Image (cartoon, rainbow, N blue to C red; front, top):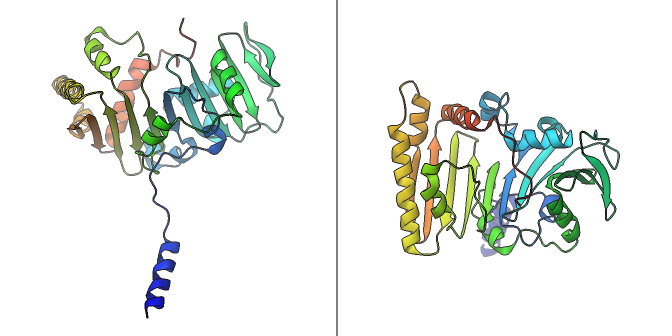
Length: 308
């Protein structure tokens, strides 16, 4: 009898699908992450574009990281790219993509303006000494700061994947998340942030590490977590985020019910040194959020040049 129960248990476990947490990263991209990486942003493009929510609200809208990758590499992100991974060490950035590219070893990208082709350790770069495009094989391409791309080439045989701090934060991300990020500190915030956000930027710069994800299967659901050096620092961050949320609610004008629904679905909590921001809003709010975001960013390209 005991053997029968044990056998049933084993078969039951064998029939269950794994529900292990953790952001999924294609091994071909994960093994290219240098040891000094402090920020990762992943977009599982192929899965994202299959979601009904994407088809309703995002299919006809620009998505900056994906569209910039397409513009720089000449690849059709919405049909040919499976996954995009942004890598940053706080000063230099690279965007890598995995997909079904050209059959030839080096796709024939046009050389525009001052861009030129030049070699480095057997790989061909297309660009200049500031930014370039690099194909690492028939299914992996990248663009970004040229020194950062060289670093990817230099360390690709020594990389063991994301550094330990990032790997740990990635475990907080559900497997179903199509957009996610892990942060390990040391990132330089953009200088063009509005002056009234200066205090918040100062607080965010003090965050030691964190994670973020969006799960868009049934609506606009996500979570961001940041760890402060001290409990007092976490309280300061918690209070600042709550204050910012309150001001945002006060600033909503009539006719923006979806934005109201979005803000109603945001809550901030503190647990010791951890501050969490939860988002649980109806899918209609995504369209309003994208309108707001695109209204502020459509005139800008993704900044990937090295900071002087």
